[in-house]
Length: 306
Image (tube, rainbow, N blue to C red):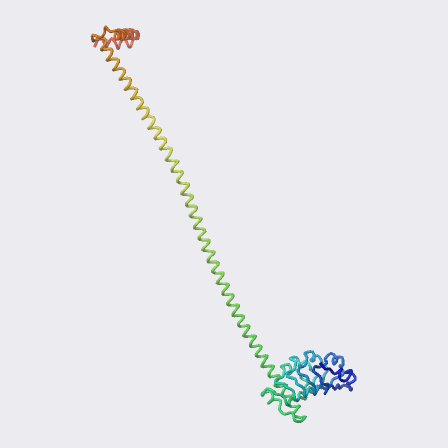
């Protein structure tokens, strides 16, 4: 890129009092850093170059009072162009500007403005006018500043409206979120209550089941001793009774056999047989032995008397 330093030497050599003429220097960009070192250069002429844009740091040259940017190829000005608060004279003739930045409304010191031969927005072109003489250029500066202030106010109102809409939307989102959170809390609360009720029922059912299990062994233990005691009280006598009857029957059978044998041996013709002789001898000895007892003697006497 071609700069002023390469075409005409040091910028200080071009400084004439407070005027710095860089016109017709075939510039593609503005040497902002070099210009910043020359705060005395309050009048800057950059006309008739090849500038298509101005760098953002160009707006740091706040010492500028008069600026000529005519006959370049500028399509737009930096957004913070309004920082050049000391600017009084601005020539933008024959560029490619369609609109001006909103910050242009901050150029409160601006007294002279030329916007001819630019493809301006129709509304801006109507406000700017023709600027054919000193008076019209001063009116252009005044009217354009008023217009840009109005645009700035409209944009501020629109920004405030958007902010208000965003705040309302944010409030609605927050209210919706709070409602959702409240609903979720209610659902969790209800689920927690249901879970608590379910666990309580399970606990009650478990306790009831334990009580039933505790009652059953008691009934069985209470019934078991009775049945055992009853069986003990009934069964042993039954066994004893059965055994006694068997013994009695056996004794009766023996007595009958002995009595039968004794009768046979004492009454029938078999009494002379050796077996009967022994039986009769045993009987006689037994009777004599029993007569030695007074009671038995009495029983035998009674029996013999009968």
